[in-house]
Length: 636
Image (tube, rainbow, N blue to C red; front, side, top):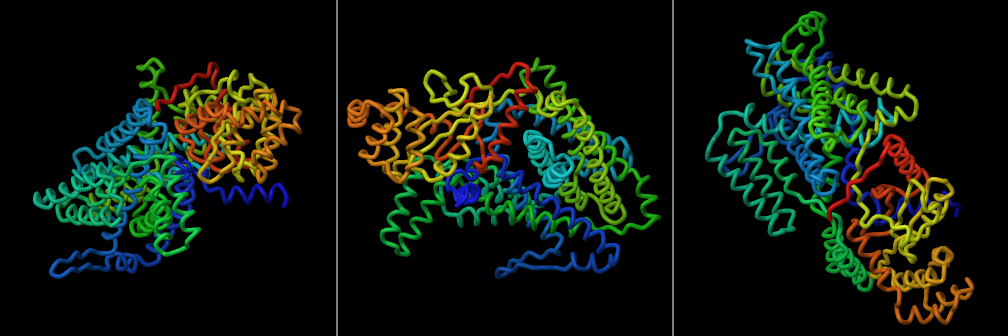
């Protein structure tokens, strides 16, 4: 098998490192990938409506009923999508918000201050501009249409028009969008809901209380939460509050955490029992153990996120974006207060709010709180935030009807095209800057949260490459782990760059690799005689031969003092050193092997040459853009 084939094999099969606990990376990939489907749905709605607006409206006004005895809920298809399926979209929004607080940069709470304030200002200023244009008119009631950013479409178009934009920019945009969506839902529930029914609102509150009790008691039955969610949705619908709020509440209640070692070892034991006796009962036990090792947040997001991004949101756009585009309508609509107010709010209000708020917070905090990106990226985030489609159409459907609804749709759709064009211009001009100025403009002077605990110590850690290299790649590895062995050809190529050093820390997975711990101690025994890396390479080259006799033979081959080596293995002299690395892995959130960190930040995704090289390039850009790099220690 060739090296490339081997790399493909282990990259596709690794059971541990496929984005476990990545706070945002997989979310960004799905959102960006679904943008094309969403754009296609919008275009399909416009084409359909302009070919036959009658059939377009008839389809979405088809009624659909759910009956249970004497109770029934009857709504047209558009309402079922807007009030029903969109609750799942906001479930995913809530899940991502909770995951970012539990595992992402927002676990350091002060990092939430700036994007939260930028999001709030990015709603208040556009609404103020809309109200200024619509002052004294009945259309002023639709101010909520002007305030929300479309997360999926904005991220997707940012990927298309800003291919060289760092991931940190997308993370900043996503954080703003999550706050934006949360506030928009509150506005929908309070301002754009029907007359409230106190009894059903009380029942919905009771359902929320039951949900919180189930979370506290760590109830694991999915049907309990499904039942609570259905009751919450139905009672909110009957109360007059928009029921999509139920999705956000459930999403925020789902905790996110990395799998702990105890649950992983229990899952391994159940799989072994099934392997020894493959019965249906043990199969269910193994499946339950594997599922229980993952957080509720990750299980829910893995299931629902593709459905909402690739089906529900595009279906919503198909049902709501269709308007008849006649010449006379366009002439009048583009001079109407509704359309002009929306264009002014999205194209002027959003970027002004994001840039001004970021500057004020940085200034008032004396630089302690600053944007996680450069100022060109702050401007680009403000302009792309002017894309407001999904929630805008959702509110427009509640605030307007007839011609006013068509004008609101036209304003929101036009803002999408114009905001994308302005954002492309911003990043195009930034790309013309010299490399160092471009890096600073995009990445900024960033203080990074360190995932690695403790930091690398040249006097203690095993380092391959220059000890003072600017870029440090750390691997938590297991000498018996096949994925570590397959990754080794990639890892050994890293220190060839003058500014890169490689550090190995032990994470022997004794529950699946019985020889891993003794092999780790053997490498430390070799280190005591100045031959750590020579033993390290031998062990990874002979992963299927790691018995005590094999280890002693390797010591002899390396010219070590074999008697001393054997005695240290028998007495487990280096057991504490291996345990210290294992404790570092636990504190740093590394539960499987191989797990990589680049300059103290965890690397998510594949471990091929291209992926790790990209992470190293990003670290170089961050250092280049920062005159005096500083770090913020992670609290654990």
